[in-house]
Amino acid sequence: MANIILNNIGGSLLLFGLVGFFSSSSSSGSSGISFCHGFAYAPNFITKIIQEDTGFDPKVEEGNNNNNNQAAAEDFTMPAVKTRFPPEPNGYLHLGHAKAVSFNFAVARMFDGTCNMRMDDTNPTKEDVEYVESILEDVKWIQLGLYEDDGKNIVPWEGDVRKTSSYFDTIYDCAEALIKEGDAYIESLSAEDMREYRGTLTEPGKDSPYRTRSVEENLDIFRKMKNGECKEGEHVLRAKIDMTSPNINMRDPTLYRIKHESHQETGDKWCIYPMYDFSHPISDSLESVTHSLCTLEFEDHRPFYDWLIDKLIPTGLITSKPRQIEFSRLNIQNTVLSKRKLIQLVEQNHVHGWDDPTMPTLSGMRRRVCHHQHYDYL
Image (tube, rainbow, N blue to C red):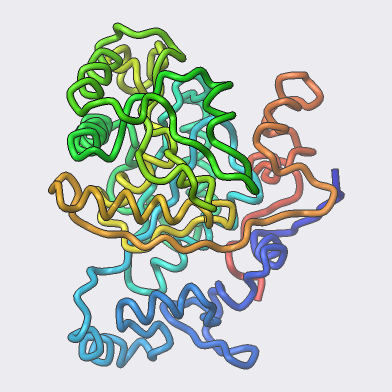
C-alpha cells in the first residue's frame, strides 16, 4: 500500500485533481478561477453542461447573482439543480468515494441546488446497518465546515436519508408496466446459457427462446416470482431491447432476480430484488434528480438509463428525466481502492478492521494523519 500522507482533506483534493474547484478562500487565485458561495470555481465540462441546461452562471458575483440568473433562467424550464450520492451499504467509503462525495455536493452547491443522500440497498445479501452508519458519518465528515449554523454542524444532504428500498413498490410497478408494453420478458435460461446467448464484445448475441413469451405469461410468472413461488435462479426479468446491439449493456439486461433473503429495511416482504441499472434511473427520477453524476465505468450504461426513462415517463409512474454525466474515477498508484478487495483484507484479518490506519478508507484516514481542515488547503 502506498505511503500516502495527507495533512487534511485539501491534500486529498489535490490528489483528486480538483484543486481550484473547491476552496473556502475569498479571493481569486490562479487564472480562470472565480468564486461563488465561498467556492473557488474552475469551469469544467460538467459545470458547463449544467450551466447550458439551467442558464445559471456560478461565476456571477454573489451580489448580482440572483438578478442575472433569474433573467437568464426565464428561457429554461429545468428545475433547480439536484444531484445525489448513492453508495451501496456493503462496505466503508474509501478515497475514491471521497471524490464522488465532494463532486456531487459541491456541484449542487455551486448552482444553488441540493444533493440527496441515498442508500442503494438493493442487494440484501451484502448489506449491513453498520455500513449505513459508517457511510453517513464519513459523508458528514468530508463535508464538515460547509454546512454550519452558529458553529453547529448540520447534515449536508437535502431532507432525510433516502433508501432505494423505500421505492421497491414503485420499481415493481415499473417492471410490470414494461411487461405490459412488451418491453420486458421472463427469462428461464440458466446463468451459463444466458452468458452464451449474450455474445461477446466482438460478436452479437442471439435471442433467447423465451423472448417471445406472451404478455400474459410473463406477468403470471413475474407475479409468482414476487409471491415466492419460484426458486432462486429459476427465472429473471429482462428488458427486451436488442440482442445484436454493439453495446453489450443493451442486450436485454436483467432487471429483477429472485433472492429469498430478508432485507434490513423491508424484512421478508420481498423475495425479488431489482438490479442496480434498473433501480438507479427510477430512483433518480422519483427524487427529481436533474444531473446524475457517475464515474466513467457507467458510460456504456447510459443508453439503457435513457431508454428506461423514456419508456417509463409515458406510464406516469415517473415524471422527471434526469441527465446522466460521467467523470473519471480516482485511481491511486499502488493503492487498493476495490471494495471487493478491501472486504477480502478485512475478512481474512490482514488488517484490524475497516478503520485500520493502513486502509485507504475515510475512517482509516481519520485514524492515521488526516486532520480535518476542509477546503482550507488553498
